[in-house]
Length: 297
Image (cartoon, rainbow, N blue to C red):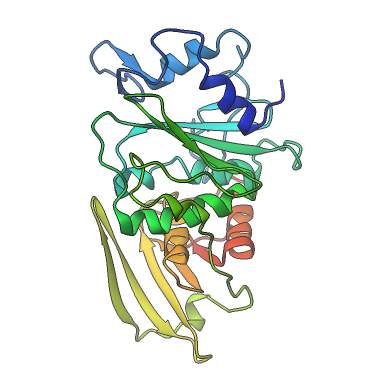
């Protein structure tokens, strides 16, 4: 079965089961937690009629050779990543975006490039506050820009089933107040970037100015270096090999025209199928974000 993100959203937001899959959840997966309703089980139950292979079709991401790391579900060429969380900085950068980027831009399953797409299904936990303004101002330009590359996001309010999703074409729908305080944020896009700048370690001066961006649930420390061209590059790092993707995009959305993000965790080895290199090349070409994992990819 082939599916578009919009068609899949239409299907799951008109559920057959009661209560609906997004209601009364205790978390994403049970994994030793008390009995109850968990997102992965409830959404799978909802899809058993009509999409029985949602969990069984090949979904591996082959990103740095992580065994068992895959996107949560698949309908044809559409990869679906599921999340049940609040709207804090820590949760926003924890998978719903970067797995869709790897699935779509690196295409680890070798699917039809014209058809491959991704959708993050983000159930906003009951009682969650809306996105803080600084984070929302950075997030929505990313979501609207990613949608042009068939990487979409669906936010669902657990209490009511109200939802907002990014769209590939046309103006985005206004942002609802339970998601962010400013409706017009959904019309923002990433600013143009300079893809011709050399952002390698040897080319960026090592006497930078340090700036810290603070959010509820986390910070991004940035070193601003003058490239000698009248422009500055924002250099940052993160200890998670996946989250460097979101950090780079957030910095671009904050207005930096050139961004380089390095991985500073345990040594990692490529998965051997070129996924990491395709992610690196696409991030630089499409978004002006240079990624460095400290290994040849």
